[in-house]
Image 1: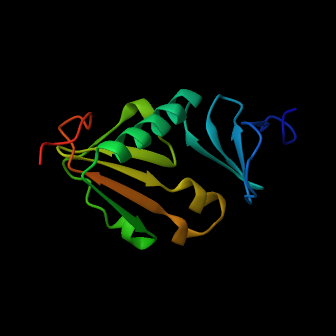
Image 2 (image 1 turned 90 degrees about the vertical axis):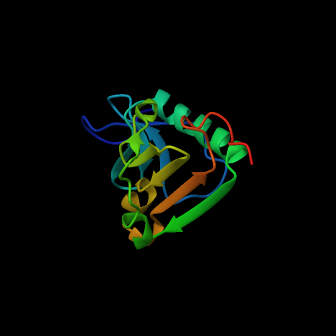
Amino acid sequence: MPEGPGPDWHFEAGVQRTALPYSFVIGPNGEFGLHAGNWVPLHATIEGWVEALALAAHARSCAHTTTTLTGDAVDDLMLEGFEAVPEVAGLADTWWRGPTSLIAIYRGEAEVMNAPQCRTATIYAGLDEWGLRGLDS
């Protein structure tokens, strides 16, 4: 059953396996996002969300180092020389590709919870130009 009255309906994106203060939902235009009284689309498409999950799994397994930033430090990231990864169709959550690293920036949970301290960025370093395999040590 769609959630929400009127034209802003959402479908639950599967049964949650843990207690969270928000739901994962699919919006009326096929976006994937979070709903907790307000709606925050994370990815413009469900396919983009799946691409982001696949990219995160791949980056975790191939990166030489992984660094996590939170809160205000996320806004201080310098993304000069990086390009957006279009396959993830990022809205609140985005991915950026640099010469030897990938950066995932997660702002959706912070936005839906009105909790800016929950902004998170993960930097996967030590990757080749396309982030497809680890660099030789």
